[in-house]
Every structure is written in C-alpha cells, then in structure tokens.
Amino acid sequence: MGNVSSSKPTGTAAHAGGIRSWFPMARSWKIGVIVASVMVLLAVIGVGLTTTNKQSAPNYWLSLVPIYGLLCVGVAWMRSRTGDGSKNQIVRQVIHWCAIACAIFIDFYIRGTGEETSVTAGYSALLLLALGCFLAGVHMEWTFSLVGLLLLATLILVVKAEQYLWLVVVVGLLIIVVMFALMRLMNKANVPHGELSHHARD
Image 1 (cartoon, rainbow, N blue to C red):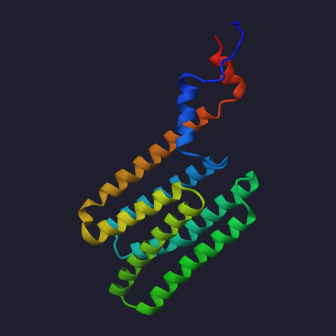
Image 2 (cartoon, rainbow, N blue to C red):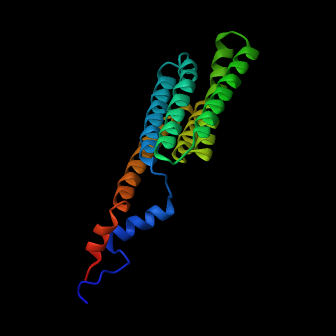
Image 3 (cartoon, rainbow, N blue to C red):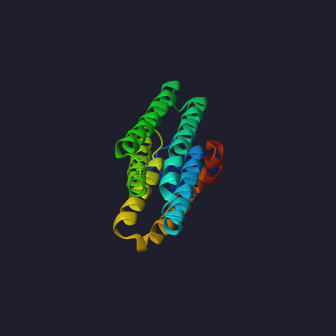
C-alpha cells in the first residue's frame, strides 16, 4: 500500500497546475513572453525619447511598425513549427501588419507635410501600433495585448498628461516582471508526470 501513488499532485506542483489552468498557453508560450518583453522594452525606449526629443519620437513610433510586425510574424512561424499554429496564421499576421502599415502611410499622406502635422501623425501611428499589438494578442499571443494597452496608455499620457509618462516606464517594467514570473510558474507546471507521482507518494 505504501507504494501506491496518489493521482492528485500536492504542494508546488498542484499550485503550478492551477496557474496553468488559469492561463492556458501553447507550447511556444515562452517565445511569446520573450518577444512581448522585447516589445515592452522598445515601447519604454519610445517613452524616453518622447520626453527628451519629442520631434524625433514620431519617426521612432513609425519604425516600430515593421519591427513589431516582424516579431509577430516570427512568433507565428515558431508556433507553426511547434504545432501550436498553422502556416495560415503566418499569412494572417503578414496581412495584419501590412494593413496597419498601409493605414499609417495613408494617414501621413492625407495630413501632408509640416512639423506639427508630423507630430500629430506620429500620434496616429502610435494609436494604430497599439491597435495592431492588441489585435495580435487577441488572435495569436495574449501577451501582445498587454503591449497594446501599454502603448495606448503612452499615447493618452503624451497627449493629456505628459508629466506622468514615467508611470508607463514603471508599468512596463512591472509587466516584464509579471510575465517572467508567470513563465517560472509555468515551468513548474510542466514537471514530468513521473516526477509528480514521485512527490505525491505516501
């Protein structure tokens, strides 16, 4: 009787299993967390640039569109390699970010040229970038939605309360910490079944 193993894991394994049930993730979730963290860091850099060199900030936000797009396409490709997604998801992400880029281009074209117009168009680029990230999170990797919300908060503070932009930096760093903490919990949740049985023995 002493060798009979309990089917119900206890302690850390059970707690981690509960976390996994709250946040169901694909096998490629680690890549999503890492890429989302990179995106958050790029957003934080953009916040710093906005506070120190406001005229250059629009070009920076604009340059993030292809960078974020390539990162999302890369995640879609990794998901297809691990069996968590299909090649159609790669195509959808390409179309998704091409549409965002086209919308930004059209917005710049309509507004024409000029320093003030460029700044305003930069805000529109930031809004579309936030929307692109949020929808990428809805349709592929939920962590990207956090990046979209962070970018949206950045836009609101830049326009309405620039003196509080430092909060975006704090929140961004907290998001990274939380995502990596979640990654650690998920690693514990992926303990092999045999090891769980060993810990659960009488």
